[in-house]
Structures are given as structure tokens and as C-alpha cells.
Length: 243
Ligand SMILES: Nc1ncnc2c1ncn2[C@@H]1O[C@H](COP(=O)(O)OP(=O)(O)OP(=O)(O)O)[C@@H](O)[C@H]1O
Ligand SMILES: [Mg+2]
Image (tube, rainbow, N blue to C red):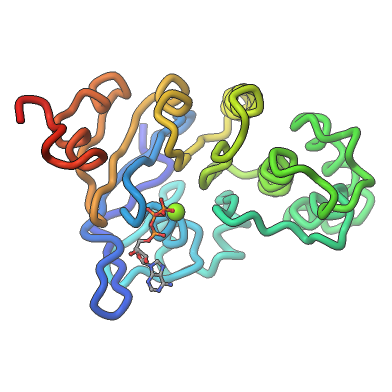
């Protein structure tokens, strides 16, 4: 079966800085894939390239069998790519339900249908009781959840999660993990950036490690965390196995 998403030899340069360097990854339908790597490794940049925020300097992006490299973000969203932002971008002066309606309007032209979809997603994400609260009044964990809800309201095939479990208490993070599993169980493919290994590794089917813009290692979580290259990228060479 073909992959849902493939990046082929993708580069992103910002002036002299190379944020993504020849990145080729693939994500299969129905997988939860973790994208990990140290700060500045190029993870959010790769999300921007996949979502269409930026065109890659070089390389191509294949989504659902089509080359989407030159399509704008809105068109990719129509085709089923949704993402959350590392820095939460809710519409603060709008209610929770209205934030989610913004997402639902991508696929529902009528306001009634969009509102119905938004309510359904709020139930699914456990935010129903907060529907009429202003986004600015949500606690951080709820804001992250709202980001996920807005993305889900677009009815994606692929959900890109950029550090949605970061900065949460262990209990909140476990609730988030359960939500990601539930999302996947509805048939949505998930590619997620996360730093906290203890949380992300038990959740993902496969992990891809970026370091200095390049794919360093990819494989099963248990193998990836033991890989000396990964240990060295995270902790510095002196901690590498056998060093
Ligand atoms: N728009 C931009 N202009 C210039 N440089 C950028 C831009 N966006 C990202 N960079 C640089 O590209 C590199 C990769 O950044 P990116 O945000 O993709 O890393 P990351 O892996 O998401 O890091 P973090 O874990 O801290 O979120 C960094 O050196 C960053 O400063
Ligand atoms: Mg980032």
C-alpha cells in the first residue's frame, strides 16, 4: 500500500542556515509516527513544508498519491492535511465553539452544519463543557486540546501535532495520549513532534529522529531510543554508548 505522506529529498534553507537537509520520510496510512530531535533540529520547519506554509527550497511532498509541493496551505487542508502550531494560535477573543467552527467551515459551507460538526468534535476531544467559554479563559492544557479540536474539525486524513503534550502535567499528558490514540482509531494518520520520550515512545508505531536538519535514525521506538547516534544527538558525544 502506498504511503499517505512522503517527503522526497526536501531542503529548506533560510539564508545560510539549513533547517531541513535532504529529508525523505514516509508515513503510512493509519500510523502514529513520532518526529523527534533536539531543539532547532528542523521539526517545525518540516511541518511547515508539509502543511504548505512554506514551499521547500528543493524537493517534493507527496500527499495521498499527489504531488502537493506547489499547493498553498488552504488547498492542502482541503485535501486532508491539518496541523496544530507549537505556539498555540487560538482566536483568543472568540469562544471555544467558534474557534472550532473556523476549522469545520473548511468542509461545511453551511453554518448549521459547521456548528454541528464543531459540537461533535468538542465532545470527542472532551471540551464540550467549555464550548461557550472564551478561548482566552482556557487553561494551557485546554488550549492545546482546542488546537487539536480545530484541526480535527477540518476532517483531516493526516494530523500534524507540534508539541501538543509539552508543558502538561503527567495526568494531562496521559489524557492527551489517550486522545491521540482515539484519533488514530477513527482512521486518521498522525505525525507528531514531541520532546518527552517517556510519553511519546510508548504511543508511536515508529519514530523518526531529525538532527541538524537531517534524518538521523528511524525505526521502532525501542530501537531508536537505544541507538547510540540518538543518545549522542540528545546528550552529547560523551554520553554515547561505548564512548
Ligand atoms: N522563518 C525562519 N527564518 C529563519 N530561520 C528559521 C525560520 N524558521 C526556523 N528557522 C531556523 O531553522 C532551524 C530549525 O528550526 P525549527 O523551528 O524547525 O526547529 P525545531 O526542531 O522545531 O526546534 P524546537 O524543538 O525548538 O521547536 C532553527 O535554527 C531555526 O532558528
Ligand atoms: Mg519546533
